[in-house]
Length: 94
Image 1 (cartoon, one colour):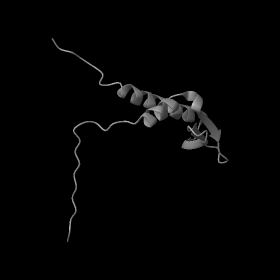
Image 2 (cartoon, rainbow, N blue to C red):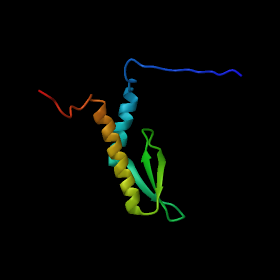
Image 3 (cartoon, one colour):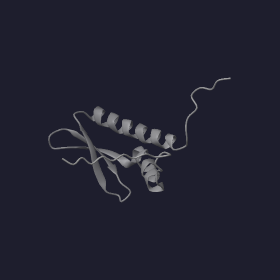
């Protein structure tokens, strides 16, 4: 039996491309999101990508749940944008 084993290591964090940052900025704006109602009564959240094509993301039973999902996604992308600015100092010692 042959076993293949591979490891990877990085000396620094993976670099985030400018395209990825622009995509996060786009997704962090609520105007690029919408909610549609499906024939089965569920609500689908969608975002408009940079090519002006709507892409479905999640399905929820209620309109309130769908909007909460969008708000959570926006918060997620805003955290990513804050992270690329560098580490956040939480506490310092003297």
